[in-house]
Image 1 (cartoon, rainbow, N blue to C red):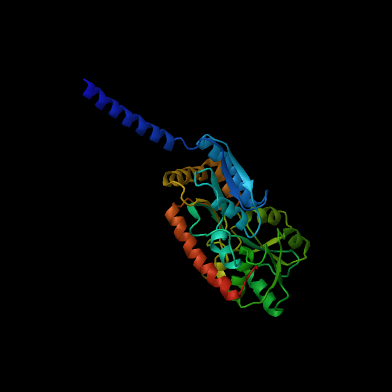
Image 2 (cartoon, rainbow, N blue to C red):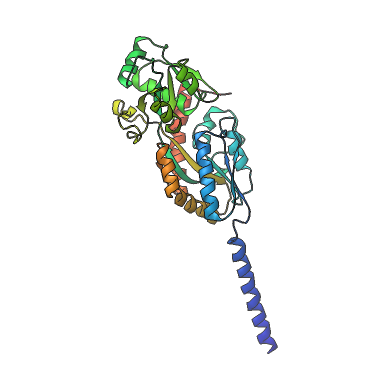
Length: 322
């Protein structure tokens, strides 16, 4: 009987230990989750960060808050996540720029884009509109290129700074069309100056371009996505004139490296489900974007391809920030 009791006690101890381990592993999340976005409050990506926070909070049954950490080409916010504890309570929501562009624009990064963070999913994707002040004597891309060839270096374009998607997008257009434009970099949105006519052209995502286009404050010249925007189907793409010329911006999620795989997978499932919810689908459509939902492995491969292409372009143009 004593031997039987001993065996029973050992089995019970193992059972309780296993149950405790399961409870511990299945207890996530037990406290609020932070979504860090490396952009200022109020911009397009911040709007979606807060929409995801609300949806994920409902799905995970825990508060999800957004923290803005802008600056240094998104390196500040990205580094904050890279150095966070890999426990599933801090996640990055960002464009791919900190992984595909910033490493080639800054001589020193506080984080390693390959080793310090793990991708979760590519959530949203979309092109941008090349827009012009209404006074610009060009109604479409053909007329714009003709204008630029007639007066090289006089047609000005605004960007969100050297090395930004807008800057590199216009660099690609100049190469494809054989034109020379005047780059006017801004630290924040140049839309007010495009509207005022201080600069002739802008490169804007749908969420900021569409309201101004519809109000007649600016006019669309071309769309940079692979197919025409459903929001403005009469506006041709760059690729229709210059095959293969596409410029996308996409938003995704990353976690600190060494985050347990089960938490990465859980985030992937929940974010993909949130993206497909009616509320998010409506917001995505209004912003002129496309819902995505890649696996971590697919996202990693996308980042690798884009980093190789952007790195070659940035080096060829000798673009440096520091």
